Length: 451
Image 1 (cartoon, rainbow, N blue to C red):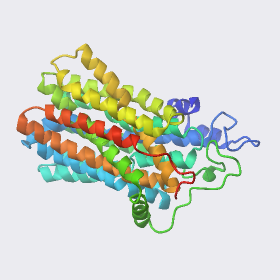
Image 2: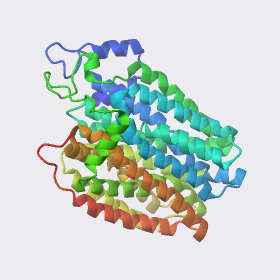
Image 3: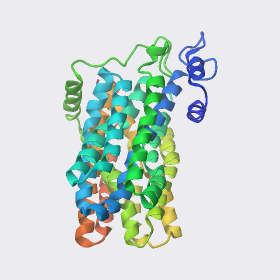
């Protein structure tokens, strides 16, 4: 694991040629483990994936701090603005299984580069918009498709192709990049939106996404065989298990769904993950800052608190990955959802004009639990659905985003109708308890997982 963090730290600083040379020199006696410099190419790919997910997550921080600025400038209701976020979240999820199949057919590099360009366009073009349908097109469609192509299915694909050992903790680190990047950008976006206008914040995200493209082209590799090695932790003579299934990308995605939908496990995972989306991206990620401002808290303070959720999420998700390698994933999910539900039920009592100790406790706790559900969910998809695991996880993740989309619109409508978000927090807390029950009903994987 130390190799991964070292790569993340030194990648922007070391000349690219030297990194490539260092990572290509494998030990003759053990090609499937570390290079002569201590690196295996799997760690290089994981480090690049970390930066990709961090850059793509920049846009995810924009809607929660731009709802009120757009409302003031254009007069659009929060429900209208929330509908653009909702479309984004739905496409973010629905495109995921097809993106996973496309990565099998076209390669991760082509898909990721195209996705980054879409996000850059969807974030930069809104500075020219004059009507709400343009917001829906740019924020909803372009960014939804782009971010959906670099969502958690990208994590599942990288982990499945490049790792046999350390799968849980690597999936935890990469998941943290996507979730935490969204929240860590919040203070900067909020500062720019407040001091320089929302257009400056939106353009910054476009620049960040474009800056990641050269890194993808130079360092992202498709398979271990492309650099003359095997997956990290695999035996030197291990067979290649990354060949795409029959049919095109669309048919592959649909056939994987058709097979998975006949199992009880899929529906329990999808139902629980839909509630996960409701309680994170859709509700807290989109409306926490506005809800805090309703109680007199400045936007920058609320954004800073949400960013701290992202900071603590790093530790929580990595720990979840470590635990996934050691504890039954079903048990972990049951614990995560039940604790999250309890915290949401008390949240309405914690809001105040200033940040009090009870709110700090909530931020710490919720940060540790924010997206800790991903590593055990990825593991369950891999264990129950074999080589189709990344695509099946794409469909499970689609349910996550459908839930998030419902919450993004629904919470905005609750705020418009009742003048407060309290009911939204209570509904989400109760649903999390239901998700815990569903998770604990998932049985152990069969001895031979279907493919």
